[in-house]
Length: 223
Image: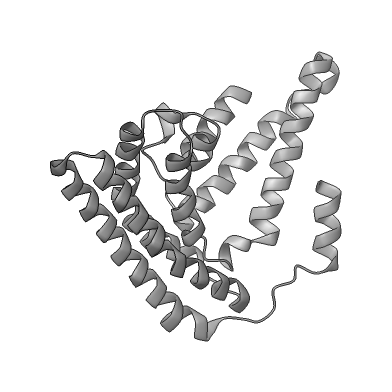
């Protein structure tokens, strides 16, 4: 059950998989990003939690008791974050995801740079679709959070231009054209996303952002 859960959660969250070093399985991929997928993730976490609860700790070895308790701890905390804190509906997550998806491939020297650039290209192909899908989750935006992410968006063009420079120095000419085209497509998608935040989202934002005393107490208890 542990292995099944781990591999399924990595499949759903390939950026996390890359961070864990599962490069062959994850480096070319991005998460779905949509509200529909998030709702499916929540159902999956509930189902997994029920399966772990079916194990009677008295019948397990001390090591397996620890494993079961840790799994339930993580699942309870994650479900609390997704179902009660619900930052996914108030924070535009796409700017952070874009930066993380590309930067960790660039910064970790686990393979030759040309190989990592190929994975960056695969993720660049998928980023416009991810950016579009992620909009569906932002249903209760908070002004402070949106403004913070708009600031992050202003920094991404410089990073993407840096990626172009790296490609120019490390890719053959014929590959550079496709690589630069993908970066330009991502730039355009980010501009559309930024315009959407400014024109459609920011005027409708709420000011309140604190989770409140009751949820804070529960968060501390779960942690």
